[in-house]
Image (cartoon, rainbow, N blue to C red):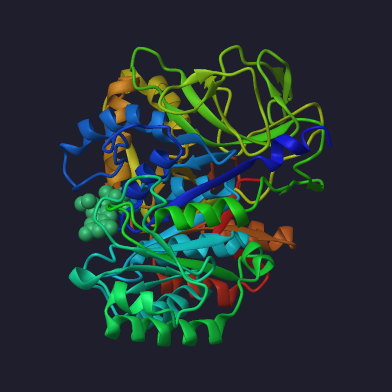
Length: 528
Ligand code: GDP
C-alpha cells in the first residue's frame, strides 16, 4: 500500500454525450478551471462533421490533434484529474466503449432541448455493464428547453437510472435566471460568459423564505423556486454517495457550458464524490488499486500521423503500483519483458516524457507493433484484465486485394489496423475470404484510405449479406463441430482464432438459436 497517497489524489473520468450536446465545450471549461489552458477555443473538437470523402483528410488531420487531446490531465484544488476523450461520431463508438473501461466514472452531457438521444442511450448501456458512476450535466439551459421535471423523468425512464438533482434551474431560454445549489444552499445568478473562478455572484441562503430571493428573482420566480425546491427536497433528500458510487443514482446539474455556467458547481462536487482509481477484475483474481506491484492494460492504440514512421502510441491505464521509465515490465501475451525510454504523459497542452505514473494515470507508449488492445503489463505475474469488450459488428465487407504485388503489405496493414481496434477481421471457413466487420460505414473508408497511404495496399470492398457476428461456444465439442461443418458458409474465425457465426438476418439467427440449444451465441466477445 505504498502508493495510497498518490491514488487518493487522482480521479480518472470521461465526458460522454450524443454529438453536439456540448462535450467539447464542457471539456474546455474544465481545463480552464484546471489552469491547463488560458483561452477558450484551445480544445479541438474531434468530431467529423459530415459523412463525405473529404473527411479522410479531416480524419488524418484530427488524428494528430486527437493524440494530444486523447487524455488531458490537470489539477484542480489539489486533485489530479485525468480526463479521457471519447470520439463523438457513432461510427467510432467502439473506441469510446473501450475508453470507458479505462475510467472510474463519467460525466454525461445531455442537451436540454433534445433530451435523451440515440448515442446517449448506447453509452449509458456500456456504463451500466460496468456499474460506472455517472454524473449528469443538463446543458444549454440558455435555450428554450423541455420542462425541467419532464426532462428528468425522460432521462430516468430512458436511461433506467435514478436521478438526484444537485442544482435546480430557474427557468430556461431567455428567462433563464440561474441555478440554486441544493447542497450548498446558494443561488448563482446567470450571466453569460461567467469568469472561471468568480465567487462574487454567489448569494447564500440559509432559508429560502429570505426576502432577498424575491428581490433577486422577482416574486413569481422566487415562489416557483421555493415550491420546486420543497418538492425536489421532499422526493430526494440528501444524496447517498454510496449509491452513486455503485452506479445506482446519478447526481444531476443544470447549466450552460458555453457560458461556463453551472460548471463549477459540478466540478466541485465531482472532486468531492467521484471515485479515486479503483481495482479491476483480472483473469486470476480481483486486483486492488493499492497493491504495490505495477500492472496496467492497453485500451487504445493510435497510429502515428507521420506515414513515414509506422510506430504507434499505445495508451496504457495504470491499474496498480508504479509505472517507471526504463524499468522492465512483463508483457503477458507475448511472455517477454519490455521497457520504455520515452513514455508520454498528457499534462496540460504538451506531451511530456515522464519518469513515473500511478494508478488512474494514462501513459502513452511508443509501440512498433508489440501491442494490441487489451494487452496487459505486470511486474511478472501472469493475468489479463477482463471486461474489455469487442462488440458485434453490424456491417460486413469482403476485402478484395487490387494489387497482388502488395499482398504482404495488405496482410500486415489489416493486422495492425485491427490490433488498433479500428475494425474486426474474420476469415471465412472454406472459402478463406477475409471479411471486415465494422460498426459504421465511415470506418471502411478510413481503412481503405489508411491501407493505401500507410501500407501501399489498394483494396476494394464487396458487401456481404450478413447482419450480425456472434461468437459461438458450446460445452459439447461434437455439437459445435457439427454446427460449424454444416453451416460452413456462415462460419468464420476471428483474429484470435475464436469461432464466429455470421447471421444473414435476425430470423436466421433466431432459428439457429432455437434449433441449437447446446450452442451459446455471444454478442460481445470480451477480448480476454
Ligand atoms: P460536442 O459535439 O458534444 O462536443 O458539442 P460541442 O461542445 O462542440 O457543442 C455543440 C454546439 O453547441 C456548439 O455550437 C456549441 O457552441 C454549442 N453549445 C455548447 N454549450 C452550449 C450552451 O450551453 N448553450 C448553447 N446555446 N449552445 C451551446
